[in-house]
Image (cartoon, rainbow, N blue to C red; front, top):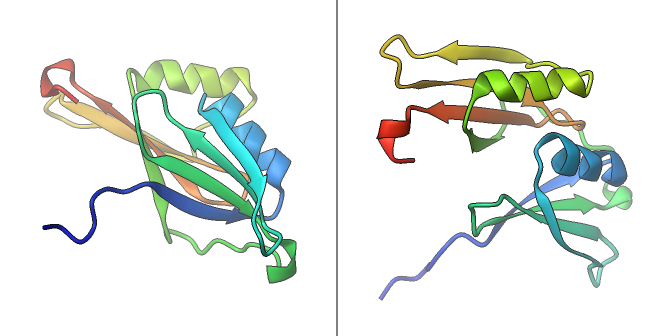
Length: 133
């Protein structure tokens, strides 16, 4: 018997809900799956990546103060088909990678980062097609 069965969602608190919602939808292409207000008054928006079951929850709770994300505190990692193509997508939106892309010398893939509006890092990971992921 396992105590925990699976990861359901991860929460990130934000100061500007609609700006963050626009980033996760328009920059990352995530699907908004639901939105509601919690019993304590938080505004919650849940997102899903096309090939994932786990959700990302954005939480707007202004009475807890402004969100200040420490450098290198946490990040979300997403698989992309091509860092080059994603970089061009960022450019079309007037954005750029905050770090990278860094390609592995053996050609097995690479990674890059872009910052979400609140300062959370988003890692984009390109894997070689033969890796199966």
